[in-house]
Image 1: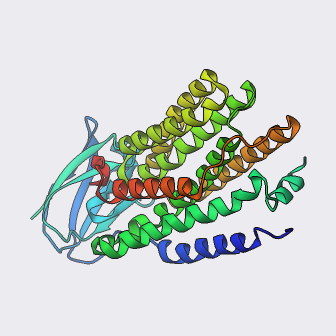
Image 2: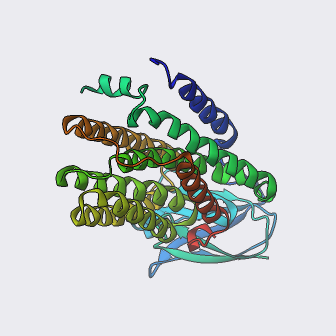
Length: 124
Length: 229
């Protein structure tokens, strides 16, 4: 009777380990690290509570290099999310560059991590 | 009635003796449902496991701990006002913050909060009922706050170790629920309370199934905020 639940404890741990091995995997990230000579250079700043990308139209399958103007980016606007391309990065004065390759066409959102600052860009 | 006695009690034939088995049944039924859904539909979703697997795993672990506490509370049914309020508050807050956090991490703050608040209020009011209207009110309030807090915390941490935060929040919630179960055990022994209700295993299986299906549907197919589109 002393170890009545030992069987269930072992089974529970086994279920957790097996499910954990299957379910816990790193998220695939496609952001940051596509630095190349022919990247599309884009300037990013914040005006009137919105992200402004200049230019705001990118070409598909060509790497984009977004250079953030930190001096024009208050508070949480430095924490940038482009969910369509799995880009998540907090820019700083030392690292103000975001690089990714747009692999699909359309109009996409860029937002801060708290969804307060927003903007859009188009991939053609 | 120390913690050591409580742990020994987990091997007895009384209410506490069913708790480990409840965790196992909840986990097993949730993972079986998830496996069936995966082979039928979810494996065709691109990046399903990398995107949602981690949060689903911890959501299922959380549900097993919440259901374990619910079953423990329901076994004794009635508690003194002070204990009942603590029960309503703890279950409401934990059942709000955990689903809120996990859904918030994949669907955004609004939907994370909606699911968290719904779950928190449901479980908080249901379990707070063990001491009457005060416990119900406490459960509703804690569920409301916990749900909002869970969704908000997840979105605020998107760029700041979100997965590590999920593990930390889960571990703290698990510790609090262990404390709650210990408190119930002490209350029951000090007041010589007897079992008043016995839930069958179907209770655990039904709720595990329901919570897993709802969470999976929300994460994969549910509405999401602009940030996650």
